[in-house]
Image (cartoon, rainbow, N blue to C red; front, side, top):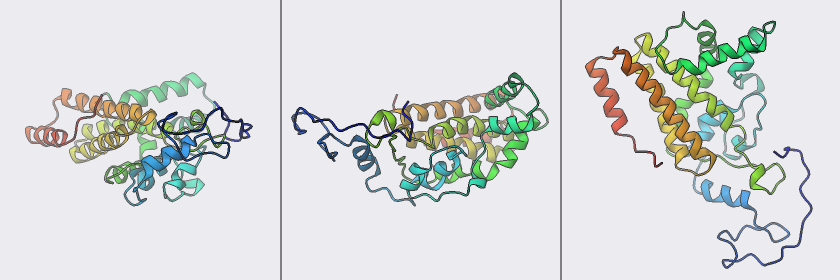
Amino acid sequence: ERSATKAPRAQEKLPFTVSAATTAITGPLNADGTVDYVTAWNQKYGAGVTSAENGFAVGAGAWALMKQNDARPLLMAGGTLPAAADRREPYLNYLNDEYEGYGAAFREKKYDAMLAAGRRVWTPTELPDLTAYLQKEKKSLDLILLAAARPKWWTPLVSGDGRSMDSAPMVGEIPGLRELDNLIGARATCRAGMGDFDGFLADLLAVKRVARHMSSRSGLEYDVGLEMDACADRAIGAVAARGILTAAQCATLSNALREMKTIER
């Protein structure tokens, strides 16, 4: 993977003129006549999307902007850059700080427990480390609820060398959102275990709405959207299998899921 600081490649003379006869995308063009695919992508998916409408700009982008991430996608989307101290601390980093003198295998085991928590009903006394982290990061976690309520979604691409799509990951979103679905799933199953049906439902519906935003795109966003939706389904299955929901709660959950559009696979 190219470094974000790598110098742009030397311009080469294109052996043909870009036109509708040579490529589906004909512009905008770089100085050497090649297509600027990064800008073309942003123009296509960002067209008509305001920062106030964009779930990534108002919520998910800030949530996913961990301490080490590139802030350019969030700023390009019109989001507000949080102070460094307010950026979310990844869960493994949190464990590293809490258990600095312990071996990596010990910390990884605790991280794996978080990944599994969204697949079973649990209570705070069972996973005190995860409970403390969820409380510490409540403000940043709740941004997903704000993101889910927005009608549109656009994650700007940024390129490491200023040109290439293969060096244009959705920096600041994908790593954070992949951890997000596990953390929110874990919080939801804990809330169910504590009898907080409304909190359980709000968390999982938010994840599913964001998943649908992302799956309407293409490439990596689509894949992550499917992953998020599956995580929410696993949490719902875990709670339903425990038999702790009332008939009225089952009906509420069923109706809410029925109203959601199906993700095309």
